[in-house]
Image (cartoon, rainbow, N blue to C red; front, side, top):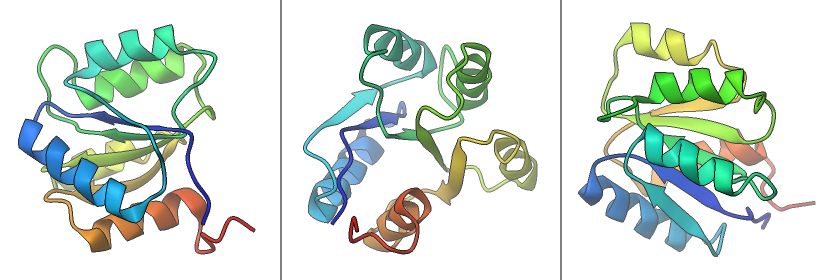
Length: 135
């Protein structure tokens, strides 16, 4: 199976982060999972790791200090488009949020909480395509 260098989870919900981490570990697609609690922390983390960006970012929308959409605006403004795949992972099922997320080319999927193994498989299909064998 194909593997990712590392995954960055950006979400202020600690319980959700724990569940997501457990499902990602079960899927065995990476050895490294980093968590940041809001967009400000995520931007700082990314700026410190410009030479090795995450291949996948799981991004919540509603967070304190900087929400997911502001993170996406800064991601694009800093010339990061095409550097990582982003999955919006949020409790918001609003059509307006889904449409807004689709405006960013790095957003490959929009998944509603809570996480499940089926949703992990859905996001991995979005990241790797239907063939996840790595060949």
